[in-house]
Length: 255
Image 1: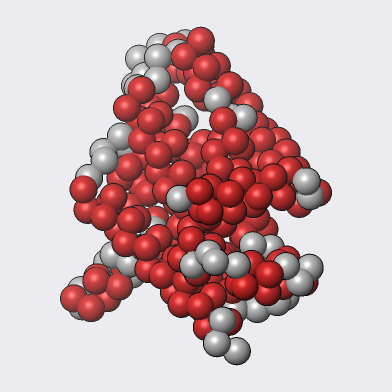
Image 2: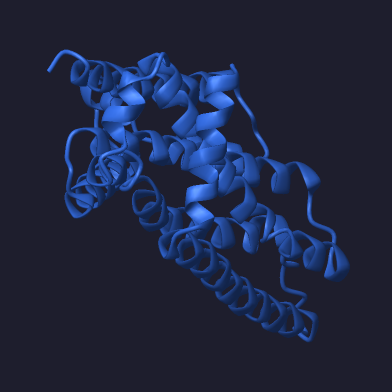
């Protein structure tokens, strides 16, 4: 356990010691803050217009009108940010020739993979914490459902964990950070859009294929509906990716 935490700490420190980490953090906070301000002003404009509607139009619900748009854009930003964060996890060690030293240490391949994964997730946790002013502003201006907000943050964290796991697997197979970024981004994009691509299909195998996508599981959880099947999906997806990465890292020991 100490070895895992030491690797995680080293990985986390590496993000804040490199320009990529700070660019990713500041870029995420800036872009999500921009969309938050834009959607909040737009929501306020619609709310004022509805208040002056002589025919008494339906009142806008912040949980149904604002939060889905806000966190829907988070998913798109994370689709680009997570591959950028994960593309260096293994390829950077190979470039700096520290990967061979790590493999020669008495630390198992599983501990290496898990430590690096926890370090990347720690960085994302810090990034998400930097956006907590947004819920604070929403509570100051309105009355958002805490269940929907919690579910939205949880869905984005699990979605980001899946993206990091995919990025780690791609990074373990190539020394090029650009290739790792492109492969992981393409994979995440397909997995995110898959449920909507097969929507309306009647064939059982197509419907089952749609269940492999992340989009539908995120959508349900973002509504504040945390189902066991969604948690099992995310845990299984992350576990499979980390196991495949561990097998890839283990193969380097036998070269």
